[in-house]
Length: 287
Ligand SMILES: [Fe+2]
Ligand SMILES: [Fe+2]
Image 1 (cartoon, helix red, strand yellow):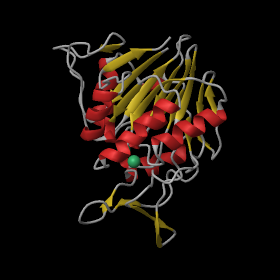
Image 2 (tube, protein in one colour):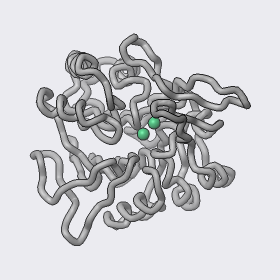
Image 3 (cartoon, rainbow, N blue to C red):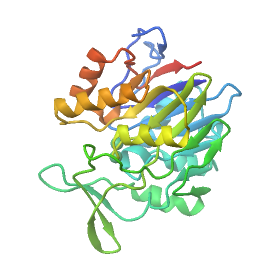
Image 4 (cartoon, rainbow, N blue to C red):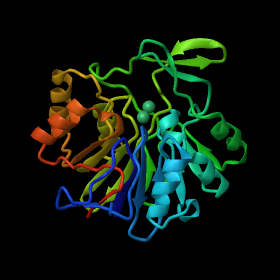
């Protein structure tokens, strides 16, 4: 089974940083980076699931074409949550008739970040909302099987008190409410050596996500955790505690991407033996 980072905030170099990760960048095949995330899951039988679609169709399709792939080459798309940097390339997937798995609230209402000096609109683009009328949507709050070996987490329970979802609001039928991003979902991939968990932004907290995966898959070892860990600006204490808890949850490898934050990426690469660097245009093969 292979996982490819298609779109990320950084793009790869032409040399492999580890034994397991292969860089797909070449002088004549340059992957593009943007604020966003998109990941390809490729099973041994050739079935493919796309997890998120980056911020823009341009980058999404550019990188997809470098791999010789088209939207029609996928069996399903899973959307992690309704922020612009995860749904920007959805329209070509909708036009290709690919089933889309999301939470019922993913595309509902305007979403804002209040982390900066002014509130920032981070909603899905209107052209994506308009295209949904033609989409094959599978909306659920529960864990569902996407293809054999790949399932969604369903809604994530917030079970600890150190991972809080702060600085987001949403327009819910005219009233501005705090947004705890309950539409967020991860995916679990079954491998011979346990689960690989892919998360979009981990607004619910990566420890909450892995804890839930272990509850839903009792006894599973976690071969890999990959995705945005949303720890930009997090204290060193919080990053340290996150790493310790992930070790205690038997996580073997971590590939922090997208919104993980430089400090968290650095601390994980310095102190977590199973760190993997997986920018856009990189691939890992998991047994
Ligand atoms: Fe997000
Ligand atoms: Fe994001």
